[in-house]
Each structure stands twice: as C-alpha cells, then as structure tokens.
Image (cartoon, rainbow, N blue to C red):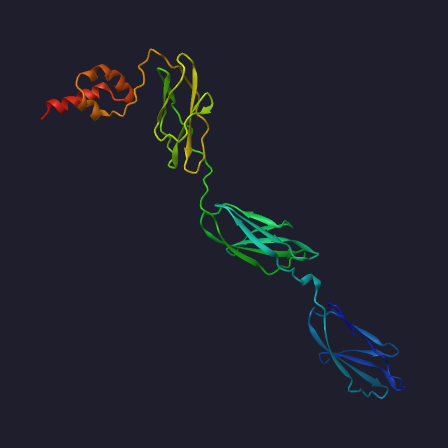
Length: 314
C-alpha cells in the first residue's frame, strides 16, 4: 500500500484458484468495493490528511464464499501545506530610550513568506523576509515583551519566540533655545556681553563667541560676561550659545557688534554689591558711583533711597 495526503493505493497478488472471482475492500468495517479479477489494485480516495484508516481485504469465490481476509491500518500523509515553519532563532533586542531594534535569524523553510511582530501580546506589524524590525514611540525605562512568529506562504504560523526588554533612560537630543537680545556694551579694552535668560528647564549654561571663536573655557551660568584683552576701536562680532544638561548646544545667536573704546570707564575688578557700596566708603564713592552703578547695573535712585532709609529713618 502507498499513502498519500488524501488517498491510499493498494495492490496485491490474486490467488491461483479457479474459483477465485475477486477481492472485497472495506474501510473502517464499511464495504467500499469489489475488485473483480484479473484486476489487483485499488485506490481509496477522498480521505483526510494525517489520519489513520483501517482497511480490510477479503477473497470472494464463485459460490459467494468470503474469506476472513487481511486487515491493515494505514495513515494518510501530512499535507505539506499545513506544515508550519520552524521558529526564528538567535532572537536579540537592542533598546534605546524610545525604540527597540529586534534582530533574529530566519528558519530554513522553502516557502517562508515573512514574520509577524508582537508587542505585549498584540500584533503590531507583518513584514517580509527582513531579519530585523525597529519598534518606535516607546516610553523610556519601561519593560516590554516582544514576540516574532515566522509565517509561510500557506499562512501557517510558527511557534512564537519571545523576549522581554527594558528601554533605556531618556536621551535628550533636543537643543535649548537660541539666546536672544544679545548686547555688547563697549568698555576700555573690553566688551560687556549680556543677553536674555533662556527658558529651557534643563539649561546648563552659555558659551560666548567672539568673531566665531568660543572664548570661555567653562560654561557661563549668568546672563552676562566680560570679554577682556580686546583692542580699542576694533569692531568685534559677539554671539551667545545655550547648552543643556545633556550637552546639546543651540545655534549661535544673531551676531551683534561692539567696538571697545578708550573713552569709556575702565573695568574695575569688583565684588561690590549694594551693601558694600552703601556701608563702606562715604564720599569718595560718589565720584566712582556712575561707573559702579553702570558696572553693577544698580540704578542710582535705588541706591539713594536705600541710603536715605538707612541714615534718616528710625
């Protein structure tokens, strides 16, 4: 006998007896057919794939006598169209803060069509024969479960291969805002740069550029910076850049130009504040006051009121 997907074929040797007239065929104890001599083969068809069947063959003689016969069990073949592909192998994940790249090796299967990708049990993609897929728009520091299923051309699915992976800490690659309202106030041999505070919450500080070159070694935390050792009467281009805690830098601000001037008040290295100015010094400060008020950005009227309250009010 020979088993196929939906049929079983048999052949046999007929007995020599002159009384022999044919062979009766039964399937699962139900009569199917009588094969008259000299024929010696028969095919049972219309069967289910991958299923056992009990077949019985009996000899029939001219008097109508039937032998006990031979009983055999056959199993039909598995339908290749229903055989699923094998699972993927070497399944790994490469997480970033908001993505996970899945990589695997495909199974050896001649009619492989592609793969289904699952995230936390939900199918999120069907792809062709590529052996990688990047899942996007994920949350940082979050655990996800990913699965890959191989699919063949007859739409049979392999068993799933799964992997749990945690995304990384948030990676900030967005630069801060560009500083605005930059000024370069002239002084003798120097320029005093100032600008508006940048609103970014993760701001780390600022860099100052003169004629396109960064001149500070450490980030500047305030919104002003004195550029020293410049030539008087020469025009300099000043720009400011904001930097965040992840090291992202903004574009340089629109350039402003300043020209140091010998006729301006010279820079005095000063740690004075309003209290020092008020308490320490009496009259000599009135001569220096215009410079200090300008240098420290303290309006004169504010100082006068402060002094007045201190001296004249109880």
